[in-house]
Length: 471
Image 1 (tube, rainbow, N blue to C red):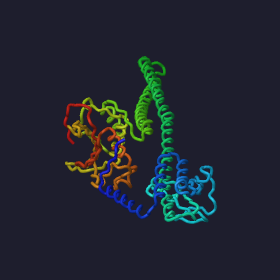
Image 2 (cartoon, rainbow, N blue to C red; image 1 turned 30 degrees about the vertical axis):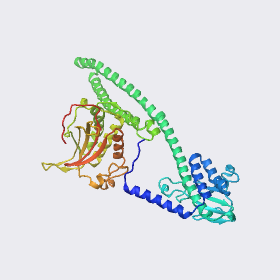
Image 3 (spheres, helix red, strand yellow; image 1 turned 90 degrees about the vertical axis):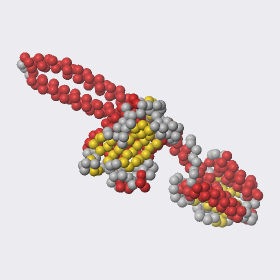
Image 4 (cartoon, helix red, strand yellow; image 1 turned 135 degrees about the vertical axis):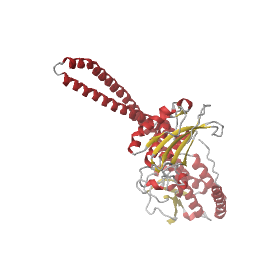
């Protein structure tokens, strides 16, 4: 896990301001020594004792042990939206789930009920928009303290603040429990995906191999009959013309099946590659992309298969494929990458090129619409002095406005001119950046002549023969 080091002066100023405000608040509260010890004990034990049940006990027994007051903790049930007792200092957890006595209710302000004083328990307002618990209000419970007749000095203010501290700690603990349950669910889901999707998908390769063998056998039989059919035609055997016509139909049928098989095989290989690289269990267990690097023929194994997937779609959209960006020969790209994830990087870039490519005027006054791709070596590009290799995917069209270009790799962001008219989620380029960063590289965008170039730069593993290529 990397350490996050904020550098914003405004953040530092805001934190320092809150610290000074807290100092002033505590001076204004004027809590006595016993009240101060009660708060410190609550904070220490709320962090030390992890379970929710023990937290409930801490809430009610700390005031009793330190200050001699009994109390009862009421929590709002997020399903029923009703208050129920969580714990009290008289019976402990044995009353958990019991309906509150008449008169106990949710309230924005403290109120008196007989010889009890009841305080609202508030959650952390800043967390509600991200982690809603129950309703959208910030009152998530109530804290009853008694006997009120024994209150002295600023006990009322103290318990109001104490209830606030309960709320903040309780909210975090509830979110923690939610997150643990979500993580368990995700890990179980990952195991299910592996067991019920990825492993069974591998069996389709066996089926495809079986079909391939049958097609080969059928082709061999067709060829074996061909000399006999020719001989029958030559000697004018009865029905030879009909048999020859039937044989031609069989050959056409075999050819059509081979084309279908080839498309099916390519689709299977690409889908399997994406399934394995996206749905592998380590991603879910670690909560981040886990890459499996291997040396590969980058152009042959990654670029060309993805280009082949999009070739027909480019043609249907009137987009020409131009390779004028140049390139480095496959054998001169010593890269160890996660083939599945980098393939999806190209799939995203080609998909965007298909969506947003548009006609522009070239140097000769012709309207052109094309995509181009290529690679170029960048000597000593990275801070440690290692060379980088830049992979470019260019498409013609209007430049992205500078203020939007800064945000296009952010999660959910979509350019204003395309968001309404073109389907998309704004996730593709964010995914591209995450994959490239986990490979130790950088992803970027640059406006260039006649259009837009999206690129990523990866570090080379060793010295290579540098072949110049121009944009």
